[in-house]
Amino acid sequence: MKDWKKVILCPNPSRDHDMCATKTAKEILERYGFRTVVCSPFRDQREGTFADLDVRPLTQELRSADLMITFGGDGTILHLAKLAALNKVPVLGVNTGSLGFIAELELSELDMLCRLESWDFKTESRMMLDVSVLRDGRQVYTNLGLNDAVIREGPISHVIHLRIESDAHHLADIAGDGVIIATPTGSTAYSLSAGGPVMEPNAEAMVVCPICTHNMRFSSYVLSPGHTLSIRMERNGRKPVYLFVDESRGFALRSEDEVQVRRSKYALKLVRLTEKSFCEIFAKKMLPGGQEG
Image (cartoon, rainbow, N blue to C red; front, side, top):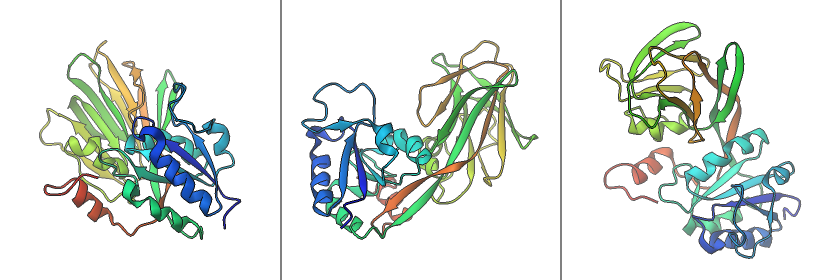
């Protein structure tokens, strides 16, 4: 019995209607002696959103948590990845969304939570990115991303020009809609839609993938994780350009800004309870003839 292990349950209210999955998981875990706490993954939730469950502050509860279980799509895990990694709390995803590439369990597999009883499970380390913006020699923005850092045009469509350097050496010039710097986890997200390569998620590398580039000779690069990438804008004038990290709110860039992207010392630990391989998951959810979860 693991009555001293504390498990945080983080349901996305728009994905776990009436908290059915969360309540089922709570019952299973408490049956095996775990302490459970329900926390909202988002701020400013309306009263009654979580049915009759007692909801506690997430940042406070994470300090003493042993495991976090999310109920939602991959977006919910992305939203919580930074907090989980900074607090060194492993995450187990339950897919109640449409695709669920990062999540470990489907709704029909909740009974597998019983495998946590012995506390003898595998975790998979997922590389993350440190993203910062330098302006006049000062750091004006910093973030931690699991999927990607994206530099792209604003609401008005226009071609943006970017110069990318790797460890102070020229790597590429891009003219197009922007660029994606993706982790292996993020290689199956926006980068894949932009024509980037698919990478095994526990690999360690960075993908540099242009978005709708005008230079047809340049598709994408796969780089070892030791590089520090520097992206600067060229000849963009006052046209709006934004930086997005894991679908976060966009940060408006100025023409003289330098965006730096490097591998982070933090990593997200994902709990594995099944023997599903990456190839199996990809074939099922992404390839023609497969079925979405």
